[in-house]
Image 1: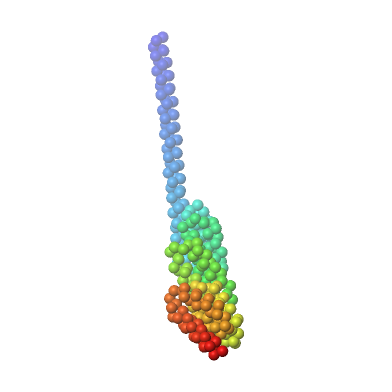
Image 2: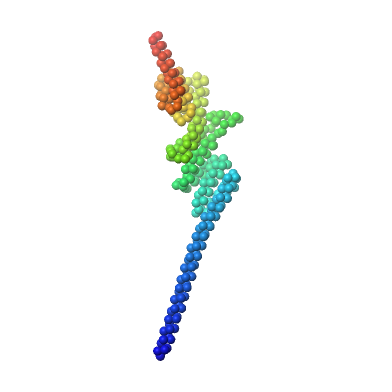
Length: 287
C-alpha cells in the first residue's frame, strides 16, 4: 500500500511538472510574439518615415528642375499619403512654392496663407509670410517700352504689397528677412510716390499751383520712406512761397531738417525761404 501511495505521489508530481513546463513554454512564446510585434511596429515606423522622405526628395528633384506642375502633384501626394510625417507639412509649403515658381502669384499667396493658418507655430511660417510680401511685389506691373509708365497704371498690387511689407516689418522687426523686406518696401513705396509725384508735376506745369502743392504734400505725408520725399518737400516750399502759404513752406522745411542725409535739399529749401523773407522785407520797406 505504501508503495502505491509513493507511486501515486510521483505520478502527481510528474503531472504538475509537465503542466508548469507547458505554462512556461506558453509564456515564452507569448513574450516572443509580443517582442516580435514590437520590433515589427518599429520597423514599420521607420519604413513609413523613410518612405515619406524618399517621396519628398523625388518631388524636390522635380521642383529643382522647375517642373512646377509635376512637382506640385508629387508634393500633394506626399501630403496625402504620409499625413503623419513631418514631410507632409514641408510638402504643403512646397506646393505654394511651385505656384510662386510658375508666377501664379495669386495661387501662391492663397497657399502660403493656408500653410500659415494650419501651422502657425511651424519654423517655416516666417518664410511663408515673407513670400506673401514678395508675391504681391512681383504682381506689380513691370516697366515696358510698349506700355504706359508703371506709375500711370493700376496701383492696387503696389498698395497691397506696401501694406503686407509694413505689417511684416511691424511683426518681425529683427529677422533674417528684415533687410530684404525693408528694401522691398522702399521699392514699392517709390512706385506709389512716383504716381503722386507725376500728378503733382502735371498740375504744376499747368500752373495749378494749389493742386500741385496738395499733391506734393500728400506724397510726403503718405509715403515718407520714399526716395522722392525730399524732392516733394522742396516743391512744397517752392509752391508755398509762390502761393504765399508760408505755413506750408515752413512745415516742409521742418520735415527736411529732420531727415537724414538730406542736408543739400534742406539747404536749398532754406535759401528759398530766406530769399523770400528778404524780398518781403524790401517790399514792406518800399511801401
